[in-house]
Image (cartoon, rainbow, N blue to C red; front, side, top):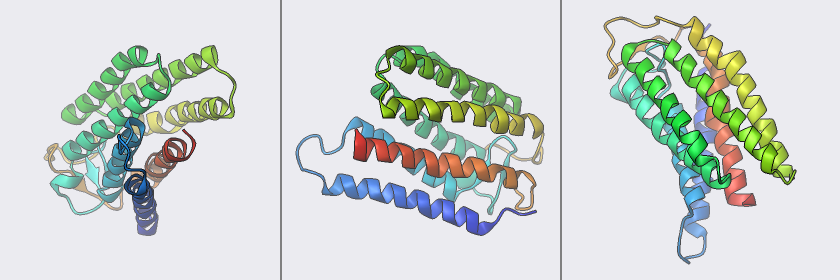
Length: 228
């Protein structure tokens, strides 16, 4: 069964709307220095990276793209954009939760290395290692929050969200990459993926696209622009 094109268009337009809201808030804010805070910048970078990936749909682990093959939906381009976006999220979290940076930095770097090795060597199990590392980072953040928590509504929501994230990675993302080793043609390079709109994995990836490209940018936007 093919993934519904309307689902993809909806994801793209919602993500674009979130980015537009951020830009409008920044543009209409006070002219006092700085015109954009670090948290706003990190959130905007992450959201734009999500918009790019929602526009050029691909699965880096399977070396497949949904639309016509080009450099823009290649493994290399997707991983570059993802690395920039994930770096912004790590810096954002580190600034919100002071004290987590030096604990999380080596884990974050190692997770990015694993994802790049997975792309370059066409080995999906390196993405499994990546997601396990993200789980370790999330659990470390949960422990940090609980150790220094004031039990505010925000702390409770963050812990709940992190628990959901760990569960989603363990039950959805890790099985996906464990089961989809060796997709795509051996002729493909990191600069050009194979188009397969009918691949069964797209139906499975829609949950990831919805959570990563919509829910996460929306949550960070609400917190950074309207709560913090």
